Length: 305
Image 1 (tube, rainbow, N blue to C red):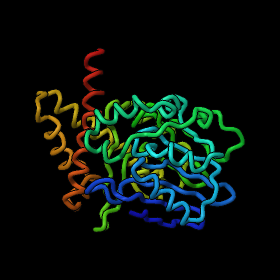
Image 2 (cartoon, rainbow, N blue to C red):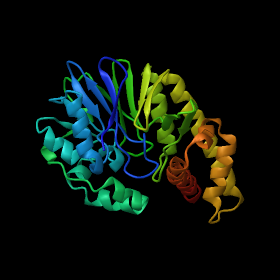
Image 3 (tube, one colour):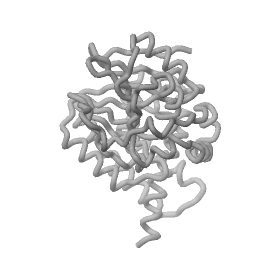
């Protein structure tokens, strides 16, 4: 299957990768900036690597100055081995703590299978990248793209700022504009989730005053600062609701109980009810993982007090 390429400006394009499973339509994106400097942000899964290469060819990309990775989760970095092979002179920029896992992705793949099960099989395993191709984002020289450390979604998450654009990965959650025209925003907070760091990361991004936010899942929104502030309020709401439910009783139904309450009380989630069945099923999986991230964080706090 082929990718969809959406042009946002003369230089900015969103490459939406083909679905790896039912319900994964319009879910995983790769950002392409093509001008005097040409780069991509994230590469998607190994199972869609050929489709991405085809899309880059269709977009007239013969070279890349940089490949930027927001983090090493396999829906963002799974195809890095194949893409790096195709562009052998292009540096792969990521968090220094992610570099060993890209050079030797065995543990990364095993952890992905444990966390995602059959979804991991749809994504496909990660092909290793030669260590000399990997560059610590904080050691970039003479690069106009500015890396911003944004731990929270993962400890090795980086966002990138270039001109008016913020390539946020999942530091601002996930956002979809549904065919109905209704928006849907959900926290991307799977275990291990770092709540305090996530809030600090959002504040850091707000301090950069970006104009437009480019989400890894999925699309571009104007008024980046407003979107980031809305997401921060959402994280406060989720923490309060989940903590309150955990204080009552913890049982096998707690995750589904939290999901039901969040869907009723979080106005940014109302688009869920406009989703098609397969998309809802996909979201339920990631929704549950996002709740589990809060549960683990809150539970750990209770243990360490």
